[in-house]
Length: 143
Length: 115
Image (cartoon, rainbow over all chains, first blue to last red):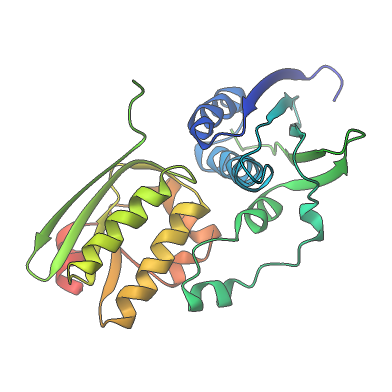
């Protein structure tokens, strides 16, 4: 993404951070998406970040996560790099929504949501953590 | 002290409890909603209208709590309906296919009458 606008945010694995990070993402997206589409991006990112915070650091472990946000005229990209336990969300099977609703389940759809709403890629980091990239095209007429 | 990101206020109208949900419903705040809904159901009220007019954001954690409570209420002959849902919140419910399971109303009174 040559010539892209970029912003870097660092946060700890604390659910109290979620609201602040959503605000950061909303400010970064600005007017390049209309508000329902902007909310979908914020939702996808919130799900990915909440999963890292809730499940990435078991047994009370502490960690920091880096979020790098980039945008140019055609694309939005968000890269999450953490030092959490290895987890490749692309290896999960598709969610069974009918089963979810019929059984009154209360969780487990976060990965489904961000995989549905964004283009997702994953790679392990050399230090044993994870790098998760969520991106989407900015279509004409979105803003 | 930071502003609370979720506020919950409930009021019983006959056999129906109206629960006003305002603010942000995410992985951090969803347990607060679960505790409130559990308390309402434990008090014997299984028909609940969630007034969502003040709800600014909902994630899968919030929808999960509503989904579980909806099943619990239906199992006891009750129901949960949502009122005053914004376009943005409805889109998230649609993405999760939750609008296929829960009834939405524009006005609280209409939801109360239908439950």
